[in-house]
Image 1 (cartoon, rainbow over the protein chains, first blue to last red):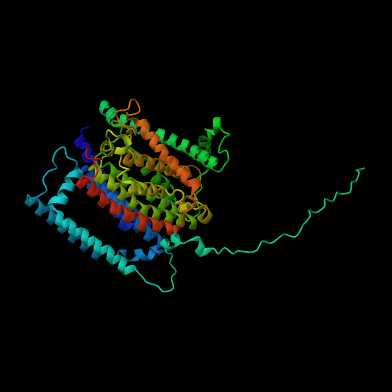
Image 2 (cartoon, helix red, strand yellow; image 1 turned 60 degrees about the vertical axis):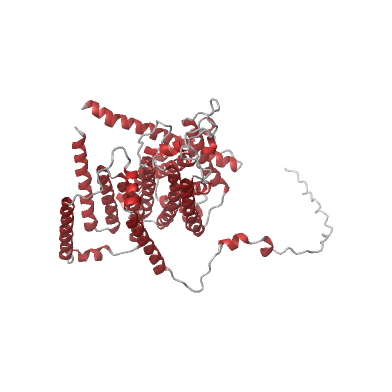
Length: 217
Length: 342
């Protein structure tokens, strides 16, 4: 068994799992199961990317989407107490719209692949002997520095916007200020009161009362 | 065909077993050591009945857990309920693939080793959150929510502190990270000196990420019984237990590798015998860090939940972000010679 054939087999295996998982996302009744299928789809795609020697992108996909974004999704879905049947009622009703969207996306993707195939402008092959990560870093921070920084700025704006949208100032909320709590002195909390010494009344220990000796018969 | 099968299947499986089996036995001994240390700190004996000095206590516990029934709660989601312990254990074991034990001894010397580790540790959350949800129990769900929020929060601080190491090293390869700390001055060449704040943050985040005391609100006995695994019994519980302790040992090894020079000797290279590096140094350092987990547990009271979040988001993450900048300046202006090969 040569390695090319093995790679091809792995590609079809991971690709097949990804397609099935993607189908399960939209067909499963239980929304938690649907989210988990999406996780599986992401993971299979990461494996496909590994086969295409895009190690950094593959692991970044796992770290960002599988490890963080989908966990938050799962969080939200678990907290929602949705009636599963009601959500699925519209499945057939929205099917035509879904098919149209899917067809448009397919056409766009094919068109993009066609345009890409015609033009020869690519990043060029991975220089031999250099690690994928180093190569990607070089490209991102030199050739594509400006788009990269703009993307970072847009993401930051998104974070600030999300915080601003959800920030509510409510009256009557009690906050703790850790700095104040740490900086507190004992004298602020405890007052030591000087008092005259009280002499205890002379108490003699209680006399030991011997129980009357009773001789057992 | 047979030879290829031998080279590509049998040998890797043997390598994997050579890591996993000592790890599992190490976990058993670590559990024994934990109970002993905490016993001593409480001025009591700890386990001392089974085997010499109680050494076989952990194995007796394992046997007890394995022969117990695995109970499925009413209306629990059966598939996810049984899947969750495996989802917790698999990443905890898979992460060990890239840990280098000495210059040549590593299962997979991949270039993106640190990234792979981050990916694996972040996937461990699924085991926790699914266990909590699939158990169909309020306590388990609350514990899972707490654990997940905590792990996600502290992962950021942990990742940022690792970024400082990566900036100084210029590589994502764990072997390269240790090699960058090699020098003639021994302990003075290690990353924990220029990166002292993030080293502390890394280890404290590691404690929080593994949901250990004093950050163990996820399984706070006094509030929510035992957290996400409250409904699990028998071997399913044993898998969670194994995953938690494997993760603790992993964090200890990583602290030793990233900041404390891995297998390098703390003494100057010119010293005879003790100046040479070797895997025993890595094990000594990792043992010290693992011991600190137990030390913390017996020393500190539990943090309150909002204080944990405050510490993670408002203290650790800002400090690490600033220190990434500082590390960049160190590298760019040559303030430190560590990691530059000089």
